[in-house]
Length: 147
Image (tube, rainbow, N blue to C red; front, side, top):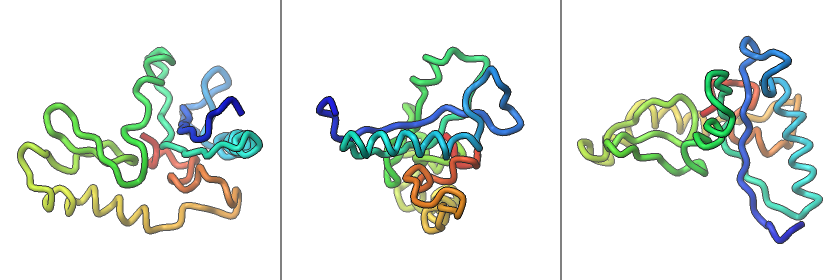
């Protein structure tokens, strides 16, 4: 479809205790919505890569939230802020160190990176929605994995 072969996508959602009818998808609504998106991508012959879900912010315009988007793309990438702070591609936004002050070994062996490697090594798929690609980027029902 339309010459697009690869697409990267993310959802904006509210945690269960934050959701109401006037706001975006709730965490439990993400897997069924993801299934629809993945089926459409498959029919169009597109390769779809899911990025971590972004938590809905009722105080910010939707356009601003879309611009915030995920911190990075892929499991083995980092985000470096102008001040040198290093952030992981997904999960809690905790700095793993500073490129201007720390050597790479210190950053790579920091607790945020160690916790991230443990999460990558664990299976995030469940019996409720087997085979969904979105689940490889953490269970979409769990806000702890959101950006």
